[in-house]
Image (tube, rainbow, N blue to C red):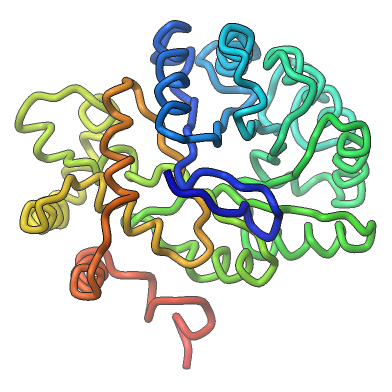
Length: 326
């Protein structure tokens, strides 16, 4: 396993992050524990969840499964634990968003479900345009001072949200954000215009979610031909049709390289500026094997050029304004 620092922090995390959105939704407790066991065996020390993950409203099932795994394994101190706050966790008007009240209450609830005294990375799951940054940082700073949160991150922010959040944190002499989770893959590159350069300038590490574009980049056409069950066949068949021509060329190119399409997609992300760790979401222990291959995959300049031809960046490529202007 390879390790790197999370953004400008001194925290060392694995270059793959184990996402647990499937826990409780598609996977039971024993299956979830088996994936956590194997992930840690492979050297993945970075686990990501959210209070709303789990498939049953307001129950925080994914966090509960991780908490029971900590109790069973005794491996809490071996893991960099990340979770999120923002989504509704109750029917009340204050059971959602990023008000100071909800941040503090949601953190306490997550700590109980996770069976731990601290969250290593507490992430805002979405920007809350109706709550001022001063209020948000007041709550986060309180949790950090109490030792319940170590670092703060964001998810699904625009570039100017990152800048605004950091400016408000600096006024409070706070560390601010150390990471941003963003939708980023060969098929989804618009974040390269503003979010990626903003994060780099501010020292915020990037954690791409959906790095395989909901399974489209994992050999979707081959799986459909072979009748292999997966996210592509069960949730995104229409998107396969939308991108079929490109995917055919992509899978043929990966075959020329002698590499699994998923490994190529992840290897490409690992070379992107500012990327700390793509978030993988295995549904079986066996599905951890291909992401590990990505760590050993080196893409040549010719291979990267071909990928840019197949999946062109937005505009002229790179950050704005050069991507759309002179």
